[in-house]
Image 1: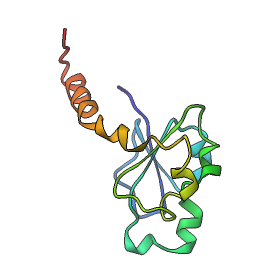
Image 2: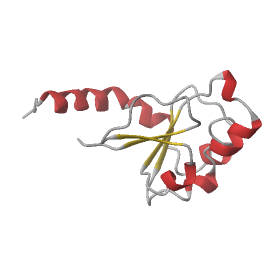
Image 3: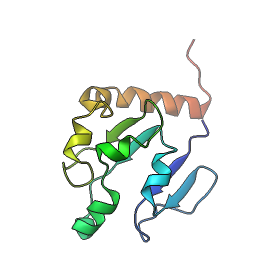
Length: 120
């Protein structure tokens, strides 16, 4: 599928070594301008600081930097005004809870694709 995954946060929270499909960054805005889908995760206690939230929170203004038709898909549980601002959650970028209902089907389709299995 050759998907590209860009992780953005402070140093020390990398999920792995960089490779063709995974890159780590500490500057948010340049990566948003390349993004079709923005995923967030809950913040660990040590990152729940005003400074970190100001630097990395996904806001409506930041979503406007993304590619046309980009989607905001925060990973539950997400906390308003921590990793995602209220205005971003209230915007059309937020795919909502309906999107999450289809997640199992999407994951199964990805597994089948990776295994080379096609359904006729």
